Image 1 (tube, rainbow, N blue to C red):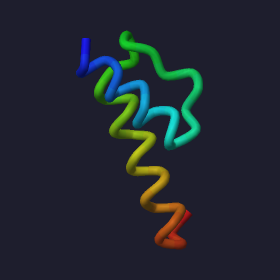
Image 2 (image 1 turned 90 degrees about the horizontal axis):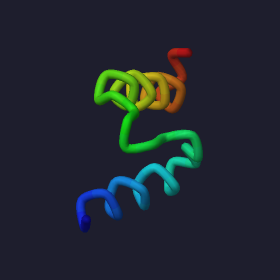
Image 3 (image 1 turned 90 degrees about the vertical axis):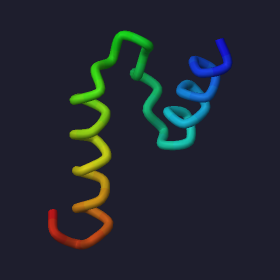
Length: 43
């Protein structure tokens, strides 16, 4: 239960309102990579 609450809080911090417990790790990692590239000015 605490893990799900933490996941929800982190998703909210990123503004990812569409992330659910069913969202795959691959999807989350792809989003983090895209965000990292964007902030690095590479995208």
